[in-house]
Image (tube, rainbow, N blue to C red):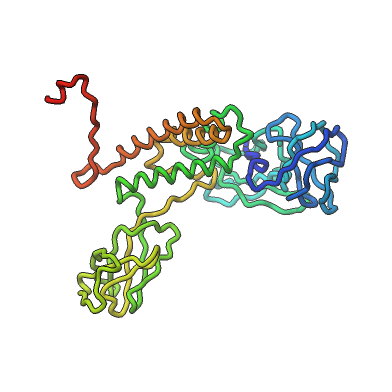
Length: 379
């Protein structure tokens, strides 16, 4: 059972980076670099880009890092040219964990499962010769110089990542790029989430019942309650109770529509919004609860195993085209980028029409076709 761990440490936007100011021959324990900013004693550093044949990882010495000379705990094993990038990746090992009970179990480090990162490849692999297709695995990075670990990865199974997962979408985008070194995984993740947000907002614009959540908000004798849900976007429906058992549908009203001494009926309550997340109820009485149905904000894709929402899975090409366009823009290839973005916008329009409610109360779209002759205007 081959278990992979993607080498992403050098691709992260928070990773400090500098460059060799001079070429270095193999066997040196001092690097002449342009800046020590962001580097620290006992950190692992990667010389060269991930996937390059002579990329290697070394450990900085325990002395404080400063100046234009970096002292290593051991000698380098390759020659490196001037201007070769040096990444402060901090971790130099991958620890592979296994659960024999699948994803329902608890992952524990395997014997001989601590592997030095293989920077000349996109992934570091471990061969679990006693593994099974029913087992599940996790990984985390370890710094041998600092004796500290990163957080655990998501579960890795024999089935791999699904077609709709963040990892697979990123892989498809990188496979289309003419070069991938200038685009990091963090950039791709941000672009994917940008497009997901655009698709989600488009869906809500044609179907207000898309992506709804529920919550209860207590209000006091002032009639005011605070909506604390972090994914709250806008209120869709409010049911109001004063005794915890009898609920009445609230009617929405603007905050400046009611008079100071206006009398309200508790069986026909109203609600209004005060600012972004304060809901008000009329009548106030002795307080009560609002059971809300609300439009939710997008949940960003973060982990490799996170998957696109169900309604967007038929439009994965729009994600790859949009991200491809952003990469082209980054390379100042404006015309090519615009062409790719137009393709994604075409898919967005199709998504919008296909997601529109198919009933008499929803928007209706009619496709107008240009007539072939002037006479057809009178048909």
